[in-house]
Length: 149
Image (cartoon, rainbow, N blue to C red; front, side):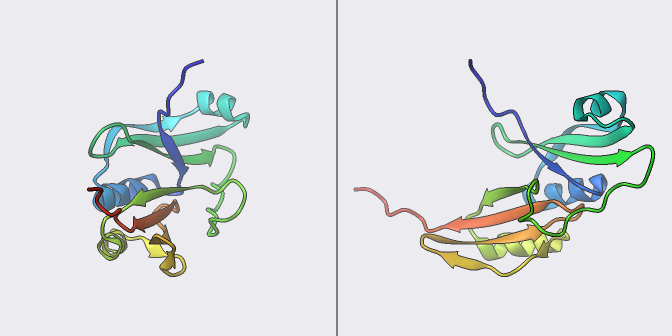
C-alpha cells in the first residue's frame, strides 16, 4: 500500500471568517470553494440532512493543503463550536514560526484570540489560539540548532 498526506481539515463555524484569517495570518489562498455540498456529505458522514460549505486552501510553498469545512443541518441550527481544544475530537494545526511574537501579533491582527499564555519548554516556546470561525491554531518557535562545523 502506498499513501501520502493530501490535506489537513479543520471544522469551522464561519467559513468566510476562517478563510480570511488563514489568508491574512499565513498567506493561504483558496484552490476552490464549494458553497453547498448536500447528499454526498450526508452519506459520507452518515447523517441524513447534513450539508456543508468548504474550501481547500494552499499555503505558499510546496504541498500544504488546508481544508476548512463548515457543517450545517438542513433540519436545524448548526451546532455551537467547542471553546475547548482539549476535548476528544477537537483538533488543531501547528505552525513552526521563526518569530513567535511577530506571528502572534499577526494572528491577533487577523482576529485570533490567545487561549491561555505563551509557554516555554526545553527547546522552544508555543501557544494556542482560536481563529475567527472557531478553529484552533498552535504557534511554535523552536530554538535554532547550532550550526555543524
